Image 1 (cartoon, rainbow, N blue to C red):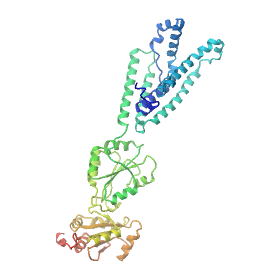
Image 2: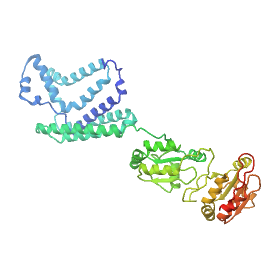
Image 3: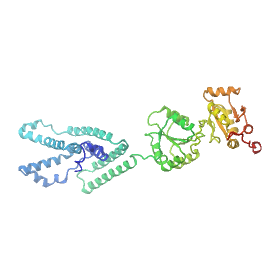
Length: 480
């Protein structure tokens, strides 16, 4: 009833059927290659079998056929076993036709010799060629295994291959024990072999089957990363490859975990997967930017600072600590400046936004006080000023009190917009700092400046207006 309810060929839709069929065909191929032999039942070599062979008449002929079939099992079994396994995919008529054909094939030599005994001289003589032919027949079966494995769900293919390796090892162990060994030895090796197959099946399908992802990964894209960073998002990028065992270990043990997913959800972290399984110039370039040419590598991009990089084998605690250090994504929707590589070796104290003339004009129209730092990565003076005079605790505190918008204008690469703004200030080089009060001309500081100069300029500029009216100026000079 169960078989009748399954449509013709629907068995191939079932994973268990696909895997069992692959095991059967693979084991038969190993038998052809001499790794093991299908054992002959004990009764076939007993004295009782001799008595059956001596019987005459229809019953004797039938018993002779049964015994001949059993004795031929080591040679015919691998091939016929595969055919009989395939009967589960055939229609009833095809199954009957298959068994009739097998029976005729086995009985044809005897019928031919009965009709014309002289045919015996055409029979090939036994020899080494028989063993070679048997081994050659194994390769079509191995190709059949390849076909069966390729129809297995891709998520289960590795698990299926691991199981086939276990079957191979089990057959090899069975083949090491001669069939004339003691019964307890044969039973022991069969028991160990079956346990080995069961163990590899458990390991394969438990640990190498479909992976349940706790994180929502999206493919790495440089433009997308830049967009997320401009939106103030915290972004975690995992650089990995299918061929990298350490990468896969990190993913299972430390990265794609419930605890990590909880932190990412709380901090609104975007997770991206940079898959280097195949050549990717974009990913190679990004790795070079992060000071590496190899994987595994995981980079966490905070909203307002340089990326935090974790290399090689990492732990879940290391990753969670790094995520907490990076902080949550910004919720104000303001764009932030791209991190300045080699500019500072610590987390920035100020929430820098990327400079654009349009944004600057918008902030000024809203009555905001804006501080713009013009710099270049290749300019050592810019780096010194940034670290020692601008991105400091006292400056950050005053900017927070006065609601100052901080912007970075990077001319490390040609920027006509920034060059034009510098020319407005009568300059064509950096460093240069401009503080724009809400309703007056900008205060410009050039060349080497100190923290006290920056604080003084911010004190002279009025705080950002919050309701259209000027706000009282904090007594910055006395506070600092």
